[in-house]
Length: 68
Image 1 (cartoon, one colour):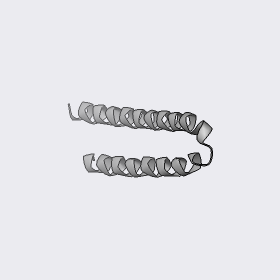
Image 2 (image 1 turned 30 degrees about the vertical axis):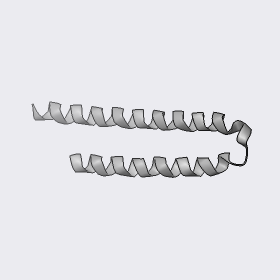
Image 3 (image 1 turned 30 degrees about the horizontal axis):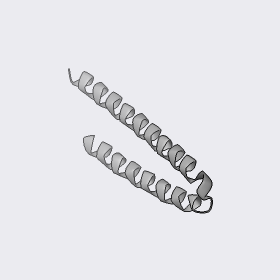
Image 4 (image 1 turned 90 degrees about the vertical axis):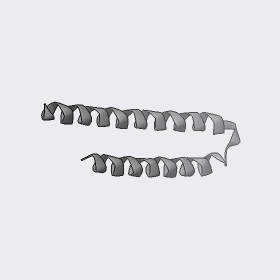
């Protein structure tokens, strides 16, 4: 079960890196809005990571509760 979580986390990191690279290329065409797009992309990533961490903590808590 924990190994599955690790694989999921690694896949999520790969997805985030791909998203960042895709967004980076799009920002090069419009330097005026680059900072705004970068900030939005960063916030989107933070939101996704927070959601992912929250799900993992919930799953872990349920697993621990089921063992007791």
